Image 1: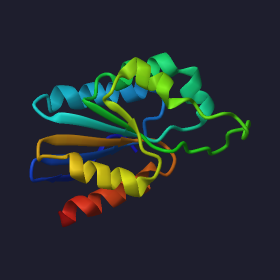
Image 2: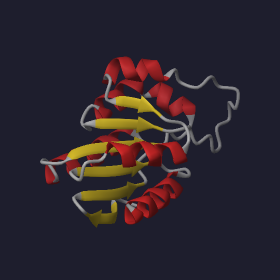
Image 3: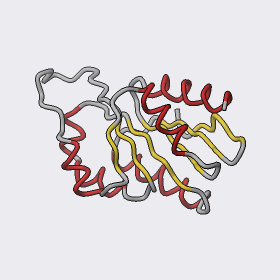
Length: 146
């Protein structure tokens, strides 16, 4: 679905969005940055198909540069025809976006990382069209328990 607020408490907001194309990602991040301009924007992105990330590396870099921090999770392979496609070397994205981009494959580790990274002035948005909704649910639960 479109941008859905899942959690809003103790200065932290959590949103979920189905965006997986760079123009969608960019518009979601721009919207959140505009509305919550005083907060640190953390974008968590589950790449949807390796080929798309490779194809749009410049566009994704531009979109991700809007966020204050970007976490790239493992790729949702889905219907990828070329199953043997080499994953995008994340360092290519990192070189373009900078140190604010980190690659954390597993959802459990993403949750741990975010819990340790938040101070109470963050907007977290989980973007993706694969299993990212599961990550949002995990994050929501972890935030409720903190």
